[in-house]
Amino acid sequence: MPHHDFHPHHHTHHGFDGRFGRRLGVYYGDAYYYRGPVTGVYSPIDPNLVVSPPRDRAAPPPTVEALTRAGRFDDALALIGARDPDAIGARDHLERALILALAGDLDQAAAAAEAALSADPDALFEPIDGPAFAGSRYTLRRAVVAAVRRAHRTGQARAWQLVASLMHAESRDRLAARMLERAASLGSAAPTAGPAGPG
Image 1 (cartoon, rainbow, N blue to C red):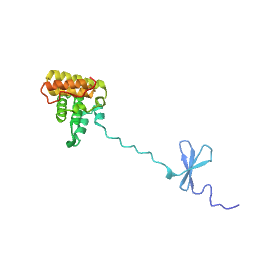
Image 2: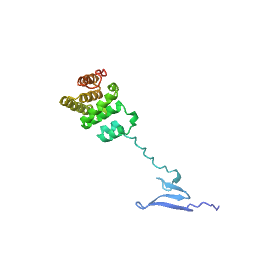
Image 3: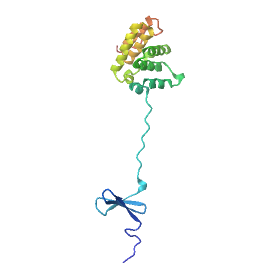
Image 4: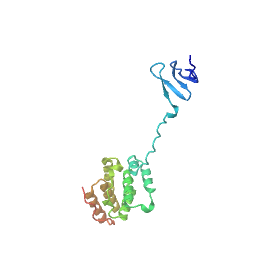
C-alpha cells in the first residue's frame, strides 16, 4: 500500500458547536473547512479573506435651514455667526431675521431685517426659501401674522421691514414691496420699490 504524507486526521482539529452536539467544520493547516449540508463534504474558507463590515460614513454637517426646521434656533444663529465677518452681507441678515421670527423674537428679527436692507436696499431681490427654514408654509405664515400684528402695534418702520422680508420669504413679493413702501413712509431708509412677483 503506497505511503502518503497526507492523513485525514493529520494537523486537523474540529470546530464544535456545543449547543447542538455536532461538528461545524475542521481546520487543516491555516485553512478552515466548513462542513456543508452533505455530511463529510467540506468547502474551504480562508480566514484571510474575511471582510470587515464597512465603516459608517461621517454625516454631513447640518445646514442653517435644517437646524432651523428642527427648532434648534440658537445653533442655526451660531452657524451664521461663525461665518467670515468680512463676508457677512444682506443675505445673512435676512436669514437671521427669518430664524429669529420663527423663534418668536420679533424685536431682534426686526433689527436683523433693518440691517439687511441697510446693507443692501435691494436685499429682497435675492430669493430665499422660507418654507425650507420653517419646515412648512403654515409655520412660516404664523410668523408673518405675528410680525404684522407687532408692526400695527408698534408702528415702527423696521417692524414693517420685517414683515416685508418674511413675505418675501413666502414668495409674496408684491405684498413685500407694499410693506417696504409703508416702512419708507414711516421714515426708514428702505427703498420704496421691491421685487415684482406674486402678491
